[in-house]
Length: 338
Image 1 (tube, helix red, strand yellow):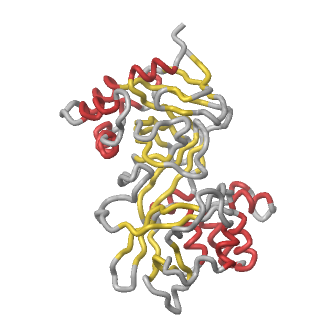
Image 2 (cartoon, rainbow, N blue to C red):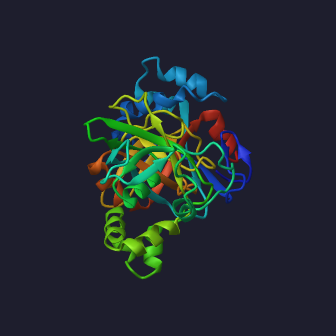
Image 3 (cartoon, helix red, strand yellow):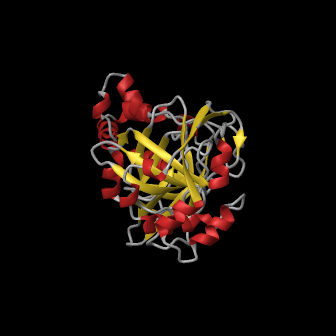
């Protein structure tokens, strides 16, 4: 049963996005479904389902807290739906960096991260290069912290949140605080286009090393991505919690997923079948978004916090498929019953 999406249907809005096809599946179609830890997925789902106010979502959230068996809960409340468009499936990873830094500028920490100016325009503003070179952000008390080098800042902006290890042993948590309105452009793809690296060679670690070894050309490369992210200090997060996602709730390592909300509703469970060297067959929850995450079969897996999580996330670039779990009535409304 397949139908094309061309407008907002239920919780999914693909208006302005490419036409998509929707296919209703059975639980037996999900490779590895019976072997997953559904209870772990349920805990992650409960973190954000309280914010879902439309349709059957509030009743489903209430049902999740009645002590029902986790697998039985998902199979009772949802139907698996495969949504595809012309873009090929692509699954990558992201993480919460932990970087050395300082609240004050020092001889070691000279690169500022900023909160968004109140007078910044709502639409497209200055590009990354213009913001870095014009001085428009300087001397206004917008600095949250200072980092060691431009590459640390760049990757912190790519991830959208992070932990900054301060000289006194404490940590500062920062989260997404807005952007300049420019679309994200991949510096990895630009290195390939320039013939500096082959596609299989590019990773976050390779980009970091190349920019460090080639400071002038590296600055030009970083400015190839005109998108610029501002931050806000997070003072209420438990140190054990992950960073805040797009739903303003902490993310769960290995269970939270960044998706394109034009095709997947925030808060929905998502069954992921990622291929590659480290395959995933796991029930996750759509709790975040990303400027580079666009398409019906495009997602970013949250791997956790710190260097080890970064090493894992930085090499993930795999195919596969993901299946959205929708409330039964909503799933049936999306497919052609004829």
